[in-house]
Each structure stands twice: as C-alpha cells, then as structure tokens.
Image (cartoon, rainbow, N blue to C red; front, side):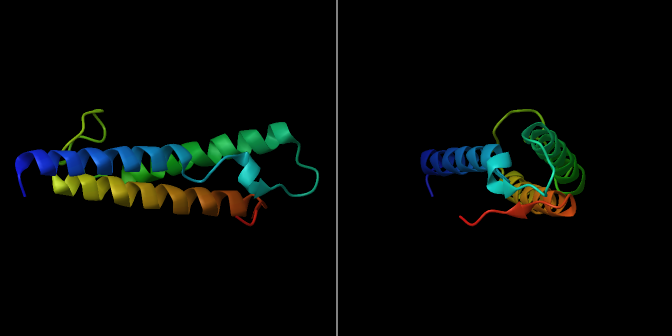
Length: 109
C-alpha cells in the first residue's frame, strides 16, 4: 500500500474513532431514568459515567509504550489504531454498565 494511501486510511480511521468516542454511550436522552430522577440528576449521572468510562478505558486498554492517543497526535502505527478501537469499545461497555447499574434503561433505537 502506498504511503499516501496508508496515511489517508489512518486519518479516516482516526476521524471515525474520534467521532465515535464523542458520541459513545450517547447522551442522557438515550436512557430512560428510574422513577423520581430529575433531568439534572440524569445529566449528572450521565457525565459521571462518561468520566469513569474514560478513566477505565485509558487505564486498562491504552498501552503506555504506544504513545499517540494520550498526546493528541495522530499516529499511523497500526497498534496505536488498535488501542483506540479497543479503548472506544471499553468506554462504551463501561458507560453502558454504569448507567444500567444506576437503574437507567436504554431507549429503543
């Protein structure tokens, strides 16, 4: 694969991953709150679960030897790309589990 094609593919993958991370787990409107939960409390729970999920994904998935994701620089290193995909998946799983543990139910798509 030519170097310019490899860079283009890496840029597309990075862009897709960043968009997915930004929308991972969705907003509070993707969840049905348990009875008695105010919109403000739902928003607080949503932010707290996202913060915990982000911490979890960074600690348990990103390999410290493969810098790129934590420096803000894009990397064409395939293993760094794999780390980002794994981190995104771990984020979504942890976020979903966190919201479910708080009594929320996912709305149908």
